[in-house]
Image (tube, rainbow, N blue to C red):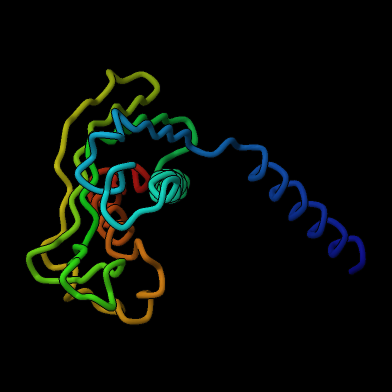
Length: 171
């Protein structure tokens, strides 16, 4: 009985160490001329200098997490973000809320990007896309995650990533 238990524990430890040894999928996120982005750039109204770095860093890290979730470990994905237009707009005519983003049906998030997916033994896949979510205000659970300033962009990127690369993880 003890021998069987010891064998089971050793097997579980070895499987766990093998799972940890597998490198995660590689996702590299680049930002092409962020100073020209429609939103989240150094010149965006309502952003202090450096806030755009927070937006880009947060979205880049989120895309890397999505890669670990959806891509096999031997694949490499390079995403070049060419433009960001965050959900909502600043409405400076609101005197007490000049630094608040107002979410309206016509102010959906949009990210223009290109990507290259490298898979072993296959030619690289390349594409350019404009990712947007016109229904971002109707998403279930939106209120629960509304404390995250980038909830709409993250949900949009999650849908896009799952649709583009989720099939790779299943195959």
